[in-house]
Length: 108
Image (tube, rainbow, N blue to C red):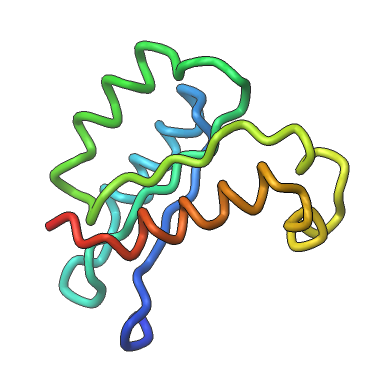
């Protein structure tokens, strides 16, 4: 599972207790000797704050990841077959730019 030079591995999860728990299992089994620490990308499943269990698990995962990037809830994405089709929507374009900025900012 070697990563391409210049590319960071990602683990993507919904901002639910189940989603972050599943991500934690993937990160716990991560082959540290073969690949750099992954970024955890948390995708909001609702336009509210993540539940307490999610926030707790995110803090516990911090040392095992390269960083955590957050994607806000974007209702426009629910109606498209391909997320690229929604990039013309200003909120989606802003979220995509913010995600790219988060992933390219060196955390550790």
